[in-house]
Amino acid sequence: MISSFAVAASDYTAGAYPVKYIFTVIPVRRVTEGAYLKLEMPAETSVTDRGEMTRKCPRESVSGFSNYYISCTHDPNNNIITVKDGFKYSESKGDPPTLIFTIPNLKNPRSLRSSGYFNITVYDSSGEALYYFN
Image (cartoon, rainbow, N blue to C red):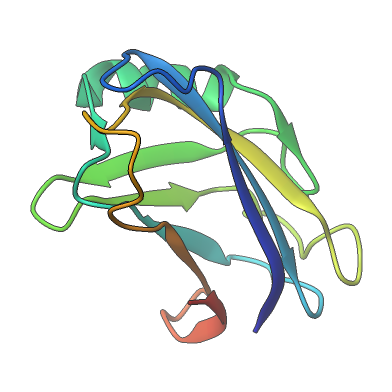
């Protein structure tokens, strides 16, 4: 289970892009070596340029991971961003850690009304779900 999950945008204007989203994730316990995160986005939130997001993601601010370099990929069919390499060499620094990362190049929904939500799951290196938020 994830005890806390927060999302903040650099701009809350409807339809704005490119926007950076800052995610804060606090799982209930330590995150194991090789773990990765899958971020499910609401259908109304989209990646404006997948290539640019992939290039910029490692250069954005990261905290709480054991590795300060993360990689991000986007699956457009399911609107899921996978965040890898944050625990490439060792487990998380804290128990529990406070994981903070930024995803660039997103587009806000066209309406300010709530129409969906973000969901995040932490997987171990073998693909088993360790922690989830929903």
